Length: 387
Length: 208
Image (cartoon, rainbow over all chains, first blue to last red; front, side, top):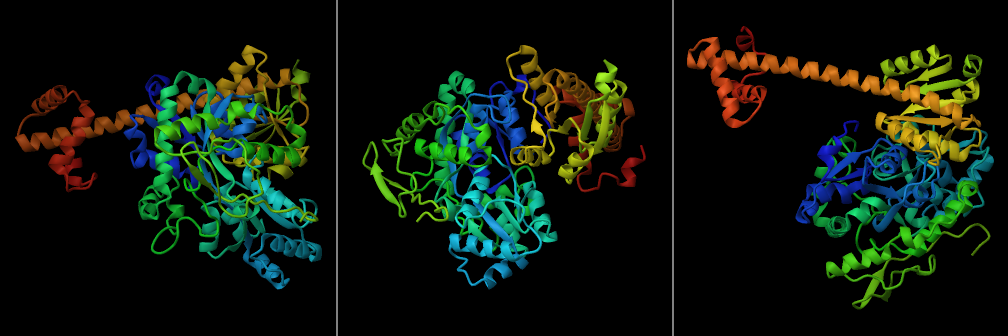
């Protein structure tokens, strides 16, 4: 949206940016279902045309905060790609939500290899086989390099010893154009966030080959990022904002509310009519294979170990040369603040900041400050030759 | 100085062709070379390879910005985002201004920072000028619409009350003052109340 409210008008309201994806639901529904209002907050949402513009508008203070990609909340503090802006990230807004969708023709070729495509490593090996025998390069569409979906894609490829190169070209495409790109074959595989995979399947353009959840189980996808100066000037508002968002996330996980969520997201100010076909009349809104969720199993808790893991992936993959000077993660990822707010809602939260990432294939329990807390599984796909 | 400028090649990506033309004209008149003007970043990789710009200016509302930034993370010859390091106050002010105006810029291959700023400044000035032009246009349009609605409501009131034009106008103005509303808003409410069922352009009410 291009229209900007005057500064004078904005003095009291909290200005938050979002990108029209399914996991913008916590912000959108906190406005539309009244969670912000119940906390006495006046929040204005500003839809952004790109992650770059969202980051820049937070960077100069046109926005107080935003729904951010996990890696972005770190990158913005480190000044990667833009002047550094101190931002804190006190909670996770959603987990999972990405997938890799194969164009129909390619999916058939992959199935013909005989590999079990329901297993992500086998699916990647099938791709390696097709790449090796193909005369044309296979084109991989991604949306944005500083994102979880891109890092997950590289880890998925690595599980079969693949990496982008001459036979496997990376193409960047804005999400709304991904569907057209897949339809016309300018990309063969699309790695993108929801709702785009569901929509590509719905329109018969392709089929989900692997999901982000199969690569990094229950990884933090979108997080709340707010400017540190705003957070320091508005400590009570920040806590109220988090309370509203946690309560909204719990509400989002209740299947009873799906129809209302769909009805709101389809509004032209949010995701628009493109998402009409999903979540309607027996169609799911949240694809069962993607396992997108917002609250259950301590989804909102900002693990420092997960921020460390994200940082290590950013360093490992192409952005490595640009990622230097490890930031003080504890001052960005504010697990302490999350615990305080959870307590005020009579919710429990883990007492520790770190867990052994990648070690849990099943949900497990950790110590909370009231009792035991359930945490989602966190297994990670193994690189080729490892396990 | 002008020889220095003419060696700088600028590519423009802007979905607003009129605005792009304004920026292009301003840059050209300052002696810069505009080597391509595009409405989207589609095919930009190839265009950058072919035209070899030193700087790409792209409108902030273009979804293609992420494409561009990803290119720069994935490909060393692709444009890299311009970062004015905020060591200098005027630089951080430029960033602020650029974001406010909706300008973003990417350097392709090592153009020096001090040569970037004047170009970005030109783009900012044109983007701002374009914005204020559009504001004026909108204001004019709103004013026109307001006047049309007021005229129409006046006609309806005259018919309803069987009164003169002046009387109708005065009663509307009184209503607006009593309700602490704008005259145009009162006019629209009257149209809705007196003529609710009919389409906006029904010939009967357009006569006056």
